[in-house]
Length: 151
Image (spheres, one colour):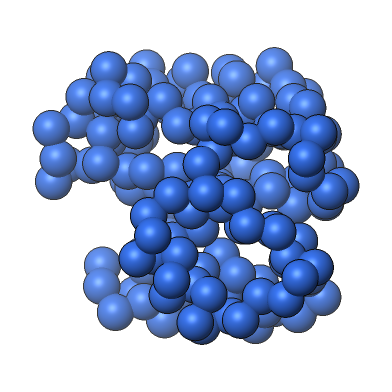
């Protein structure tokens, strides 16, 4: 979910053993880049809007990846958190995880998520995942260590 130009897919392709069954990206330019880079076939479904995604339309899958929008939590932004509509999109991941019950979730966001609202936002997210039965392990990684061109 929130595939952007395919960062999760790139890493999972490099790792091997994964097959992408679908991607979700509302930004038409990011999706055009994704399409050009990966040339997904008919077996990979495209969903433009996470908020309109019906879980019944999704195939079964073992891993749900989501880089939910960071602008609401980033130190570079206004940090409006859940008061910003983009900040609530994590709950679309939770909604689909509840309906489809994939064994694994792989989520990413900015370090500012940890400190937003004195840690309460991150606590809400952890609680939501715990309520769904997921054991959460989290860490902060330096993007430069993952072949990214930025920090």
